[in-house]
Image (cartoon, rainbow, N blue to C red):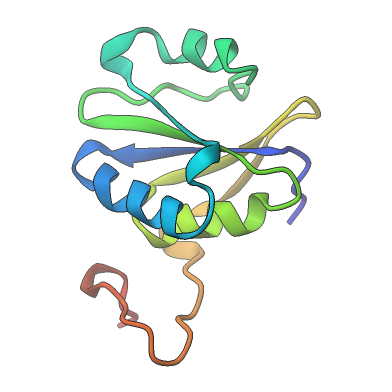
Length: 125
């Protein structure tokens, strides 16, 4: 997987936002996170103001979804995995050098460490 950027851009259901932000803060990325809400303006412009060029062909979420942005140079894979593990639908790695699709939610769920609780919706079948 080529992580050519330094920023993780994830689409998250609004109902899951609290849990995702809690995980981001616990993971040590809290001071690096920004939520982009379509109800507060056009998402592409909000991303551009944050210094992120929206990926080619990327469509902004609608309705009950928001965009979570984590600036995590050298840690995009870990930050993206954390977001996917806690409910992000789509994660894209973005930056000045381009974008790379990280994975679909069901394709990248790290194995839990022994002794850690796994939320029921993420448990393996």
